[in-house]
Amino acid sequence: MSKVDWITWKTDPKELIDSETINRNVNNKISEINSITNNIYENIKSEIDKGGLTDESLSIDGTSPHNTVANRIIKKIDDIKTISEQLKEQINSQVLEQKNSEKEQLIKAIEEKISEQEKILENSISLKNKITASNTTVGIKEVEEIINSTNNRLSMLRGRLEQAKEI
Image (cartoon, rainbow, N blue to C red):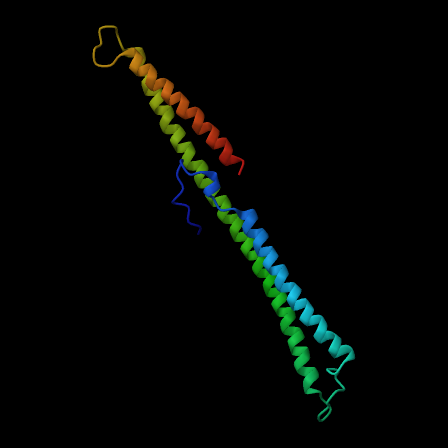
């Protein structure tokens, strides 16, 4: 399970995992490994087919130990290619899963903060409607400032929510 408990409504989307960069780097490294193994593979395969590692070279009791070892190496290289491709796919998948978990957590945190601010706004409007001119504890201007401030926060949070959804 991916760890996302560090994400709050304040988290900048740039702090979330950058799956594109990670996957590009992984893919590049796997390509480098494949390039090296392909080069080794081709050289050994060429020697098996046309060179000194044919099944007829250095034949002892009808078998060629060099050819046998060379064919085992070819098989191991094929195994390395398969494993590296599986590893690449697994990493790419897990990185995407982590990104989605982080995105969902960020959206959830922002939505919770929006809900909280909407309750504050609702309570402030209710309070404003109950204030009379004779009230000396809280003035209408103070409540209107709270309402304006809350509306500004809600606007900012809705913008962050849209930004998070586009990740």
